[in-house]
Image (tube, one colour):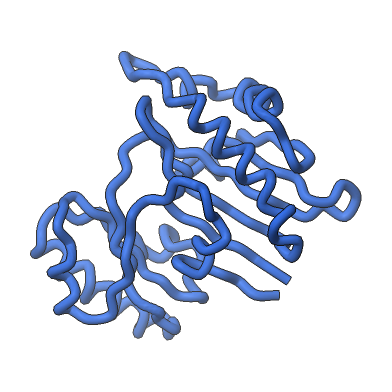
Length: 207
Protein backbone atom coordinates (compact mmCIF):
# COMPACT_ATOMS: atom_id res chain seq x y z
CA UNK A 1 0.00 0.00 0.00
CA UNK A 2 1.15 3.54 -0.72
CA UNK A 3 -0.10 6.76 0.92
CA UNK A 4 -0.28 9.81 -1.35
CA UNK A 5 -0.51 13.37 -0.02
CA UNK A 6 -0.42 16.90 -1.44
CA UNK A 7 0.51 17.24 -5.10
CA UNK A 8 0.94 13.48 -5.52
CA UNK A 9 -2.64 12.89 -4.39
CA UNK A 10 -4.04 15.78 -6.43
CA UNK A 11 -2.88 14.12 -9.66
CA UNK A 12 -5.69 11.61 -9.16
CA UNK A 13 -8.35 14.34 -8.91
CA UNK A 14 -8.38 15.52 -12.52
CA UNK A 15 -11.53 17.52 -13.26
CA UNK A 16 -12.21 18.47 -9.64
CA UNK A 17 -11.91 22.07 -8.37
CA UNK A 18 -8.75 22.23 -6.27
CA UNK A 19 -7.69 25.06 -3.99
CA UNK A 20 -4.66 26.75 -5.61
CA UNK A 21 -1.41 25.83 -3.91
CA UNK A 22 2.34 25.44 -4.26
CA UNK A 23 5.08 23.73 -2.28
CA UNK A 24 8.02 25.59 -0.78
CA UNK A 25 11.21 24.25 0.81
CA UNK A 26 13.19 27.36 1.71
CA UNK A 27 12.52 30.80 3.20
CA UNK A 28 13.26 32.71 -0.02
CA UNK A 29 10.27 31.01 -1.66
CA UNK A 30 7.91 32.77 0.75
CA UNK A 31 8.02 35.70 -1.69
CA UNK A 32 5.78 33.64 -3.98
CA UNK A 33 2.86 34.34 -1.65
CA UNK A 34 1.02 37.20 -3.37
CA UNK A 35 -2.31 37.13 -1.53
CA UNK A 36 -3.28 37.01 2.15
CA UNK A 37 -4.80 35.42 4.08
CA UNK A 38 -3.17 32.18 2.99
CA UNK A 39 -3.01 28.73 4.54
CA UNK A 40 0.30 27.00 5.28
CA UNK A 41 0.50 23.26 5.93
CA UNK A 42 3.27 20.89 6.87
CA UNK A 43 3.61 18.09 4.29
CA UNK A 44 5.02 14.81 5.61
CA UNK A 45 4.00 11.16 5.21
CA UNK A 46 4.14 10.93 9.01
CA UNK A 47 1.77 13.89 9.46
CA UNK A 48 -1.50 12.70 7.96
CA UNK A 49 -3.65 14.46 10.58
CA UNK A 50 -1.99 17.88 10.39
CA UNK A 51 -4.40 19.64 12.77
CA UNK A 52 -3.58 17.22 15.59
CA UNK A 53 0.09 18.24 15.61
CA UNK A 54 -0.37 21.96 14.89
CA UNK A 55 0.67 21.53 11.26
CA UNK A 56 -1.80 24.03 9.75
CA UNK A 57 -1.67 27.81 10.08
CA UNK A 58 -3.67 30.66 8.53
CA UNK A 59 -1.29 33.58 7.92
CA UNK A 60 -2.36 37.18 7.31
CA UNK A 61 0.93 38.79 6.27
CA UNK A 62 4.52 38.02 5.26
CA UNK A 63 5.81 38.16 8.85
CA UNK A 64 3.28 35.56 10.01
CA UNK A 65 4.19 33.42 6.97
CA UNK A 66 7.88 33.54 7.94
CA UNK A 67 7.09 32.61 11.55
CA UNK A 68 4.89 29.70 10.43
CA UNK A 69 7.62 28.45 8.09
CA UNK A 70 10.22 28.24 10.86
CA UNK A 71 7.74 26.84 13.38
CA UNK A 72 6.98 24.01 10.95
CA UNK A 73 10.69 23.33 10.50
CA UNK A 74 11.08 23.11 14.31
CA UNK A 75 7.97 20.92 14.55
CA UNK A 76 9.24 18.46 11.95
CA UNK A 77 12.59 18.18 13.75
CA UNK A 78 11.06 17.74 17.21
CA UNK A 79 8.73 15.00 15.96
CA UNK A 80 11.37 13.50 13.65
CA UNK A 81 9.17 13.87 10.58
CA UNK A 82 10.37 13.40 7.02
CA UNK A 83 9.49 16.85 5.69
CA UNK A 84 8.53 17.02 2.01
CA UNK A 85 7.98 20.77 2.23
CA UNK A 86 5.49 23.41 3.31
CA UNK A 87 2.32 23.77 1.26
CA UNK A 88 1.03 27.29 0.71
CA UNK A 89 -2.64 27.30 -0.26
CA UNK A 90 -5.29 29.87 -1.07
CA UNK A 91 -7.70 30.52 1.77
CA UNK A 92 -11.16 29.19 0.88
CA UNK A 93 -13.98 30.51 3.03
CA UNK A 94 -17.05 28.36 3.57
CA UNK A 95 -18.54 25.37 5.38
CA UNK A 96 -16.50 22.20 5.57
CA UNK A 97 -17.55 18.76 4.35
CA UNK A 98 -15.85 15.42 3.94
CA UNK A 99 -16.13 13.05 1.01
CA UNK A 100 -14.15 10.06 -0.08
CA UNK A 101 -13.92 6.50 -1.29
CA UNK A 102 -13.58 3.26 0.66
CA UNK A 103 -13.15 -0.25 -0.72
CA UNK A 104 -15.77 -2.40 1.03
CA UNK A 105 -15.15 -6.18 1.02
CA UNK A 106 -18.81 -6.83 0.15
CA UNK A 107 -19.94 -3.89 -2.00
CA UNK A 108 -16.68 -2.83 -3.61
CA UNK A 109 -15.99 0.90 -3.80
CA UNK A 110 -18.40 3.13 -1.86
CA UNK A 111 -18.54 6.90 -1.61
CA UNK A 112 -18.89 8.70 1.70
CA UNK A 113 -20.18 12.22 2.33
CA UNK A 114 -20.74 14.17 5.52
CA UNK A 115 -19.82 16.95 7.91
CA UNK A 116 -16.10 17.64 7.59
CA UNK A 117 -13.26 19.64 9.07
CA UNK A 118 -13.49 20.02 12.83
CA UNK A 119 -16.98 18.44 12.78
CA UNK A 120 -15.87 14.97 11.62
CA UNK A 121 -15.33 13.55 15.10
CA UNK A 122 -17.84 15.67 17.02
CA UNK A 123 -20.88 15.31 14.74
CA UNK A 124 -20.20 11.90 13.13
CA UNK A 125 -22.71 12.83 10.45
CA UNK A 126 -21.93 10.80 7.32
CA UNK A 127 -23.74 8.76 4.68
CA UNK A 128 -22.65 6.16 2.08
CA UNK A 129 -23.60 4.98 -1.42
CA UNK A 130 -22.19 2.42 -3.83
CA UNK A 131 -20.04 3.85 -6.63
CA UNK A 132 -20.71 5.35 -9.06
CA UNK A 133 -23.58 7.71 -8.21
CA UNK A 134 -25.67 10.15 -10.26
CA UNK A 135 -27.13 13.59 -9.47
CA UNK A 136 -30.16 12.10 -7.69
CA UNK A 137 -27.95 9.96 -5.48
CA UNK A 138 -25.78 12.97 -4.65
CA UNK A 139 -28.87 14.99 -3.75
CA UNK A 140 -30.17 12.22 -1.49
CA UNK A 141 -26.79 12.05 0.26
CA UNK A 142 -27.04 15.74 1.06
CA UNK A 143 -30.60 15.23 2.30
CA UNK A 144 -29.37 12.43 4.58
CA UNK A 145 -27.26 14.83 6.64
CA UNK A 146 -28.74 15.38 10.08
CA UNK A 147 -27.06 18.79 10.28
CA UNK A 148 -28.90 20.43 7.40
CA UNK A 149 -27.65 23.87 8.45
CA UNK A 150 -24.37 22.95 6.75
CA UNK A 151 -26.28 22.93 3.47
CA UNK A 152 -28.87 25.65 4.03
CA UNK A 153 -26.89 28.00 6.27
CA UNK A 154 -27.90 29.46 9.61
CA UNK A 155 -28.23 32.90 11.22
CA UNK A 156 -28.35 34.80 7.94
CA UNK A 157 -25.82 32.62 6.10
CA UNK A 158 -26.55 31.78 2.48
CA UNK A 159 -27.08 28.21 1.28
CA UNK A 160 -24.06 26.57 -0.31
CA UNK A 161 -23.81 25.96 -4.06
CA UNK A 162 -25.54 22.55 -4.06
CA UNK A 163 -25.35 22.21 -7.85
CA UNK A 164 -21.56 22.36 -7.76
CA UNK A 165 -21.38 20.10 -4.71
CA UNK A 166 -23.46 17.45 -6.49
CA UNK A 167 -21.14 17.60 -9.50
CA UNK A 168 -18.13 17.05 -7.26
CA UNK A 169 -19.70 14.07 -5.49
CA UNK A 170 -20.57 12.42 -8.81
CA UNK A 171 -17.01 12.94 -10.10
CA UNK A 172 -15.49 11.58 -6.89
CA UNK A 173 -17.69 8.46 -7.15
CA UNK A 174 -16.30 7.76 -10.62
CA UNK A 175 -12.63 7.95 -9.62
CA UNK A 176 -12.36 4.16 -8.95
CA UNK A 177 -13.33 3.55 -12.58
CA UNK A 178 -10.10 5.26 -13.63
CA UNK A 179 -7.98 4.22 -10.66
CA UNK A 180 -9.02 0.71 -9.60
CA UNK A 181 -6.21 0.46 -7.05
CA UNK A 182 -7.78 3.03 -4.70
CA UNK A 183 -8.27 1.54 -1.25
CA UNK A 184 -9.11 4.79 0.51
CA UNK A 185 -9.53 8.38 -0.63
CA UNK A 186 -10.31 11.15 1.85
CA UNK A 187 -11.13 14.71 0.84
CA UNK A 188 -11.30 16.66 4.08
CA UNK A 189 -12.16 19.38 3.99
CA UNK A 190 -14.20 19.98 0.89
CA UNK A 191 -15.05 23.63 1.50
CA UNK A 192 -18.19 25.14 -0.01
CA UNK A 193 -19.97 28.49 -0.01
CA UNK A 194 -22.73 30.07 -2.09
CA UNK A 195 -20.41 30.56 -5.09
CA UNK A 196 -17.90 27.74 -5.13
CA UNK A 197 -16.74 24.44 -3.67
CA UNK A 198 -13.09 23.36 -3.59
CA UNK A 199 -10.99 20.42 -2.50
CA UNK A 200 -8.73 21.74 0.26
CA UNK A 201 -6.97 18.60 1.47
CA UNK A 202 -6.76 15.03 0.18
CA UNK A 203 -5.18 11.74 1.21
CA UNK A 204 -5.16 8.58 -0.92
CA UNK A 205 -4.19 5.01 -0.04
CA UNK A 206 -3.54 3.07 -3.22
CA UNK A 207 -2.57 -0.54 -3.90
